[in-house]
Amino acid sequence: MIQLDPIAALATAPGIGAIAVIRVSGQDAISITNRFFRGRDLTRQASHTAHFGTLRNRPDASGEETIIDEVLVTIFRAPRSFTKEDVVEISCHGSEFIIQQILRRLTEEGVRLARPGEFTQRAFLNGQFDLVQAEAVADLIASDSDASHRAALTQLRGGFSRQLKTLRQQLIDFVALVELELDFGEEDVEFAHRDQLRQLMLDIRRVLHPLIESFSTGNAIKNGVPTVIVGKPNAGKSTLLNALLNEEKAIVSDIPGTTRDVIEDELFIDGIRFRLIDTAGLRQATDTIEAIGIERTQQKMRDASLVIYLFDGLNIAPTDLRDAVAEVRTSGKPYLLIGNKLDAIDAGRKEELEGIASEPIVWISAARHTHLDELKAALSARVRTDAAVQTGSAVVTNARHYEHLTGTDNALARAITGLDTGVTPDWLAMDLRVALQHLGELTGEITTDDLLDSIFSKFCIGK
Image (cartoon, rainbow, N blue to C red; front, side):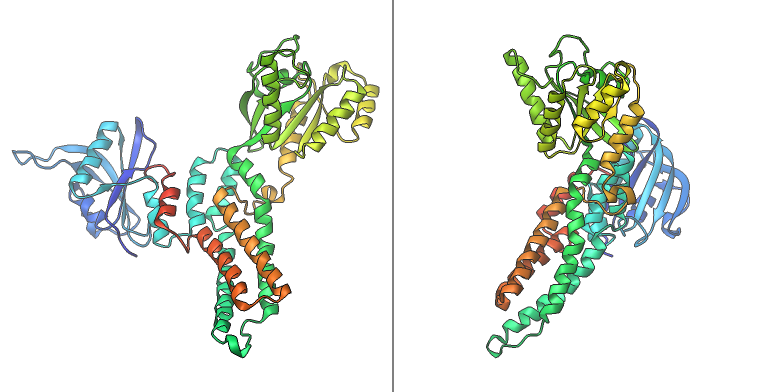
């Protein structure tokens, strides 16, 4: 592996703590650290070993080396390290002063301070993993729920990228044969068997389609599921939000139209992050401010991944419920019907309203916190209907991946149509090249410096 110029950065979170870890990677990382480490000779130690000692300042005028800190130095020799370069990890006390002193000594010895994501970028450049897996490192660090952690870990372990790389290589072989035909254009020869090429393209699209379809779920897993609570004024939307969060987040009042702006907070259910959004009641506005609030409600409904339609089971008219169900159905958004004030209605009223809705209703009492567990279970089940979430299969959470997957699929669809219509090999080769370009950029086999800088600049320093 190529050992690039040595870099260093704090690998643990900044701030005062018991321990901090400073990571050094690159050419001569071990020997450079050894210059001001007093303990065993690090250059003679085996990989994956830890050594106690002290780090020293340069000798002063009297020749004395003052101690910076007592540390534990761990050695990872290339290529058996995260970056596949020589790596040193210095565990020191978590004083900001000590950290800066150690980084200063490293720079004095010729080490450069790392840029954001530079360690992971080196791991990618040295072939530790592909670009999809490299991006999963950032997602894994940022994961804040069981679902986002599982999606990032699946992607880090290879996910769909290894399978796509194999299929891409097979497609490259076919493209080479198609382009070879161009050299014999006047002889009407066919090196690439069209039936085999068609089958390969169909196989690739069969892999792509579940990944493309998983993006809406994957994006929600990564960023949280935007879940908007809508309904008529005084249906109990703010009471429900407070009950789910177990705090007085929203003002509750008997006066219709109390909530005029959007109120948001987060709730974790079964490892999934829901971004709950309380909104103004849906009705004819009585003033300009309320009209703005209702417009924001409608916008949140358009942006949401899941809609909770809450209605007052005691006072709602059957026609109003019928109209409400029709409205949420036509929105095209996944939704749940929630009947409130369970404590005040009888079984006959419930049966009547369920017949009008013609679909299941989750019954609760927001004020009394009744059946909230059933509501949470329904929310979790509504998101987990996606098989990928249930099984831990690969889920696309990255917009860049989605763009290249759809670009590949579109190019292959054009190529298949070309086969059906008998296009010339040069037109067929053009669509196949576009598909290969997208697959190559997806996994990092085709990259530009600007692309890598854009991706890794979003990482934290030290990773």
